[in-house]
Length: 409
Image (cartoon, rainbow, N blue to C red; front, side, top):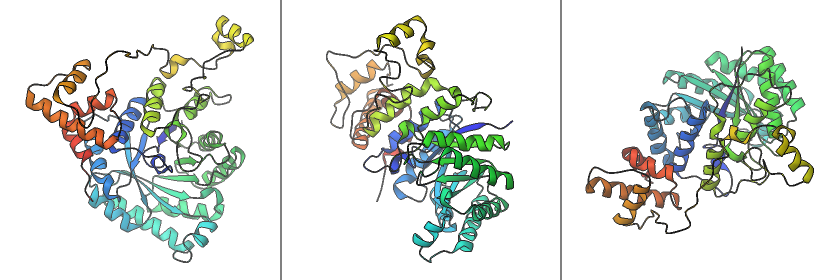
């Protein structure tokens, strides 16, 4: 029986969002939280980008050490052999790749402008897949950028060539967000009727249809007996109008009408929703919309007399799912008295007080001062006060933290 998996791209497409960014520590925390949430895969960055190298290698070390337990970490590259060569020079232990190239007439004619023709695009993708496999990649996905505006006959030819070269999946990219649930279901059904290969569904929200389109694409794969990987971003960030929101997609699969027979990856732990959404909001500096599904301030708020009365009698009258399911409902304690924080100019006394509150102790003064120095760097790195999980990470994995904070031009 096929399954629907979640592949989160916050650390790749999300950080490409104009006007926002994540530090390498924040990207690392997102990966850890995604792992705890049971997400199958994180597209965790760019192996050909110099300032990503230490972060990528450090996160692969966390995975090797079992800190990141089940989350697959995949790098994003252009589908050209030179990028694959450089990726493995920079990140030798990389095992999972997404190789991307444009396939629509619009992109081939007006983006490449004669640099690549239709045959050369297929040749480039094939060479990149073969090179990745030669380096020992366990999984390779070939991304058809602008698939939703690509001629379906050419898409089928492109996917067939990539599969023959060793590709394990292909990504159907609705790059401009122009699909509707009807068209993406129909197009993927035709493609998967010709080629049996797991599909990643990557949609954008330019028409406000991103979650609906993502589900329709996943259904097309499922109905063809094929696994799908819905691409998401935490809180729906992403280029332009954003990507499919992680929590909304999971809620829709679990609770949407007509989705009961479609099997979501059983590892998904929705109780992490509240934590990861709040962390991403703080890290990105973007408030969670009040009406955001599941985690918005009004997601379980009732004011209308009829609604309040009905919800108090039986929550199912006006609530589709339980707030506890999303990790909500616990009281949040806010310290309104003295508050000592750790920053880039903190001293040893204030630092010791903060870690005492977290019940973290150090074997001697030398270790304490070493961690303090790292915590200072972390604050420079983030440019905002560290949250508890970040403070704990720095104390528990100082060598990894040091690598993450080290960037050289």
